[in-house]
Amino acid sequence: MKKQYDLIVIGTGSAGAGVATACSKEDWKVAIIDSRAYGGTCALRGCDPKKVLVGAAEIIDCNERMQGKGIQEQPTINWADLIAFKETFVEDIPPAHEKKLQEAGVDTFHGFASFVSEDTVQVGDDQLTGKHILIATGAKPAPLSIEGEQYLANSDDFLNLEQLPSTIVFVGGGYISMEFAHIAVRAGAEVHIVHHGDQPLSKFDPDLVDELVERSRELGIQFHLNTEIESITQLADHQYKVKATQNSDQQQSIEIECGLVVHGAGRVANIDQLQLDQANIVSEKQGITVNEYLQSTSNPRVYAAGDVAATKGLPLTPIASMESQAVRQNLLQHNVQIPDYKVMPSIVFTIPKLASVGMTAEEAQKLGDHIKINDMDTSSWYTYKRTNEKHTRIKVIIDTKAKKVLGAHILSGEADDLINHFATAIQFDLNIDEWKKTIYGYPTAMSDLSYFLEE
Image (cartoon, rainbow, N blue to C red; front, side, top):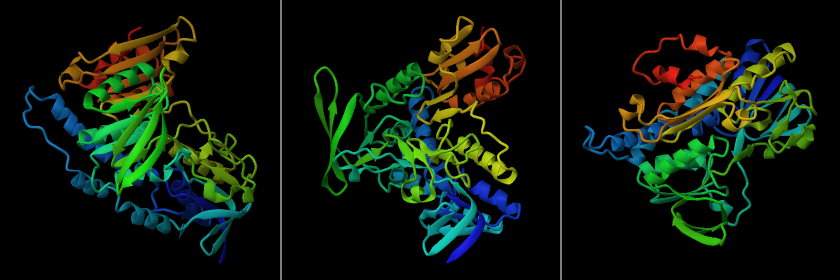
């Protein structure tokens, strides 16, 4: 069946659904398509359900740290119960999400979308033609081209495990591997991370990453760095052998038998099934090529937002939401808003958490002698000593001439909340002297601010 629309949105996550609703409220005829349950990665199979599991792991960690300091009994994680609890945060989202879109006047479609021309998309038996089209299909695990790749589980699989295997191998040293490793090891699994580089989390401050790796090793997480996966073979149902080679002075072969091998080696734009060539849509390694207004450079009726678009933005939910807001304005008012990537706080929900915003120490050191880097081991400070956190550290990058914070990098249980204060300061160019006048509740993590900002 052929149908005409003012706007077709492909994807129902953070980058897509808001645009569909906003345009429908302006009396546009809007359709939205998704091949999976409505709601997107973050809400259904990413940040939100992951943090439910992290919450349980944090309870285990806190109890372990406080043993002999007032806490006597150590709880354990019942994995099946935890997954069932996680599911209560997920199960109602798809129907509620679709109902909300329909109530806003949006036509909803289920199935894989593929272009058949510059303005027409095929989904099932329907051909939808749109004056405008927004691609917001997110990302998927990157192909690794290794023997036995078909045996790799992905992050979706891990979040839906009915039983936790006794041994797990994570391939790659990014967010997914590090966060899930910290969950799994505290749930009792033997955990290995196999990473091709000499340090995981390559985009974060290397000193803080080293500290996090030290803590991870204390927990029993085994790192195989500078190591390449050679093959994955299936030994029996749910049993696998991972063969890898460690690149050192003398190459060393490694074999690990496990119950699960998880892909944590990066993601790529989810565009393979869209048939972009049929619509004259150009893409690159990072995703769909767009201009500053998130408009396709080769097909102006098409926009892209979120992880599928090749922009300056990090692959984070708040960035997808910000780009979504820009697209809705650019559709309704014809290219009036350029996304602002000045501040992009990023958090790894390991235990302790690792957070970053703004300029790195390496970048700042190139600016001159008016840059000061406050690098502080905070493990002996009251804020962290009271819960026996032994691996906490902060780096704050200050422009002493302009009296502004240029960046912050934090490792601690409080890092996720603290980083947002620094994000606000950088976004609004807060003067350090003015910022210090703020009175924060005491004793809290933010009441340490004046020490962080010493010039």
